[in-house]
Image (cartoon, rainbow, N blue to C red; front, top):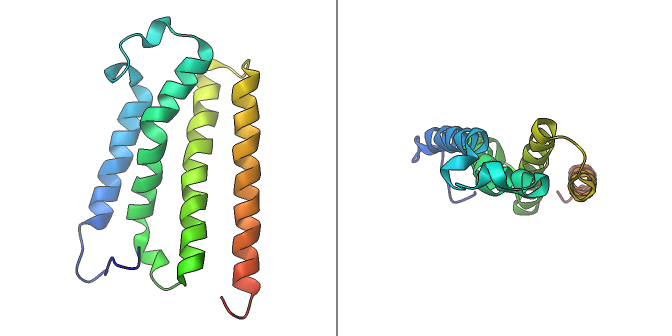
Length: 134
């Protein structure tokens, strides 16, 4: 993200907003990419929604708020980008499970795993900010 200069690239937040719109469309209408969506099981429905929308959501958020990352060191930017990506997967999985039900133990396990990753990344960010070398 350092290579993005906010003076030279005014369209990056617009691309981020477009990615968020594409992510929302892919999440709401997964039948666009998966014609058999109505006939598949619960785990596959949740996975389909995540597969088509989580990464686009994360990249859209990163592009939308990239200016806030330019004044930090590279290690902190990298960890924050990982956190945004993890939270993109966490939020799409949680919303998918709200739509389709929380009856899948596999999806609950992944949800807890993604939450633990997010907590660890937040702790790393807090430690990096507290460090005098950050």
